[in-house]
Length: 440
Image (cartoon, rainbow, N blue to C red; front, side, top):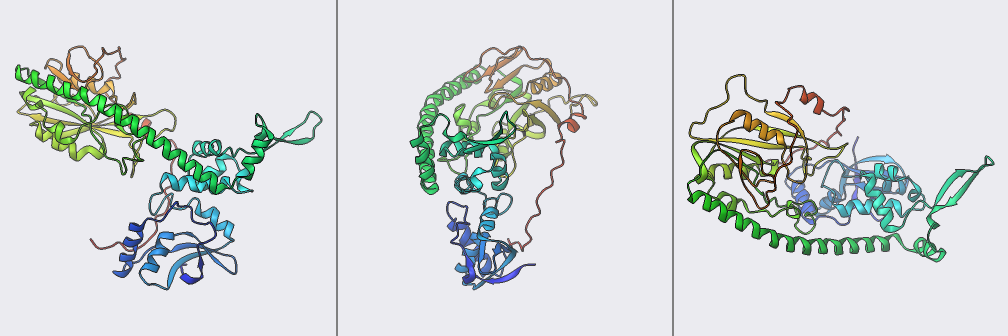
């Protein structure tokens, strides 16, 4: 049951803040909600008999102060300041303002820099901070904060300890590392990360300028083909969509620009693809979930009317997952549009709208999509735009189009594939905090 606690009694100075900084815009939005009569979820506190330690809800506490409130609703549990710190490092992993990479680094550094918690395994620290185990391992390497003692059984049956952190290092180096303040190490890590980001940005800009020339040459070739009167009954396209991350400074690590040149949607719309389409023709157009609105624009600009789509469920190695802000991207959409009156497949010959296929190189599409198109339209002339490989019986347009290697056909999808694609384990979702929504 939430209690009303005076803000003046809540301590925020005990190292329980895992974020690198508060977001001023979020504080202002929360404060406006309170002023307008809205309600925010309770904050999280521990109480040691003397002090209340804040571990969850720093933005909400700041918003209450900004709104002129003297007290705040809180869920209070018995515990010390250190208990609050342990709770804080994993806060906001499933609710509230999304944690930045800097926030996650800071949370892990709090644990690695502690005399007790720093001896925990990477698995345990990852569990507490709600990050991946490799992320913790990388932070250990960057800070040289390896677990310094290992217990082992001797040949005499006794238990001994070894200082493994000193292996391969001079005694002076080990002493220096142990004497460095964790906050200073965190600053060094942040500076090194910033420097690496700048290096990546320079390399990316150089590569983008170089590869953009290939798009210009490809556009000229497409225009020439249209002027020569070539037309196709099937157009298969995988445009080089330009997806804008939240920040081009820090969010480009996995961007498409690192692999191939991208184009603004307006430039893709302006291509003379409609001039290549026969009077009765079909367009198969790939799009990722964030680019669906752009894909509808492109389909209309090229002169096609949307009819339906298929979903490619991506099979990844092991437990790998795709990128994404709200949901991880485990599928792509193959949109189908028509121009005029092309023949639809005969009843009973339609493929399911869902098929499973393994992922390939970045942006590479599954061979199963070719099988679908060739099953529907075995004799119509076909062209693939933004092709990665040449395929027998197809014309291609793209910056780099080597010959395709033989691929074992997967065949028409079977509905049972959906069962095989489902996760073997049931994941219990966290309970969302209750609260009034702001009126639109």
